[in-house]
Image 1: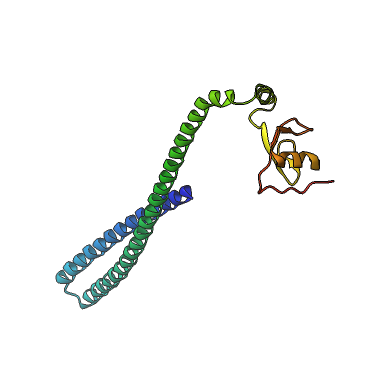
Image 2: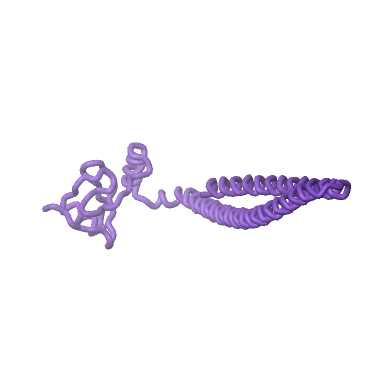
Length: 205
């Protein structure tokens, strides 16, 4: 969207420059016709023939009509330039607002990342103490799984399926996990399972 606004701003800016160039050309044309009128008026003053005088008067009238037409075109171009100016201003404002919103969003994300990094550092600092409180056999099992599976070691149950390997679990495993009296693992992938009240308990018999 930002690229589109930038393109529109550039396009209207070029249009405004073209309008200004056309307007200046019209001004030059008007000046040229005014100079013609001056020449024709001088020739009228110098001529003694009625026919030539009338012909020159016709040329003067034609130039005056041409000036009126050129001035009308100038007014129209000025209106177009004003419209283009408003569009450029509006597009520039929209682009500035979009940039401001993006910068604000990036700032929020950066702050969130910083907070998460702090939380992670705190958890990593406490990991040793927390690990010491876990039974050696369970800790050993977890560390072995961590090496094999990566961070996705402790997974939930949803619709009677292991969230790690997505294999169907037996009702006995789900019930044992619900009881929360022992460490329960998936018989398919070996991951440690946990269960919370908001999980769907539907399993096959």
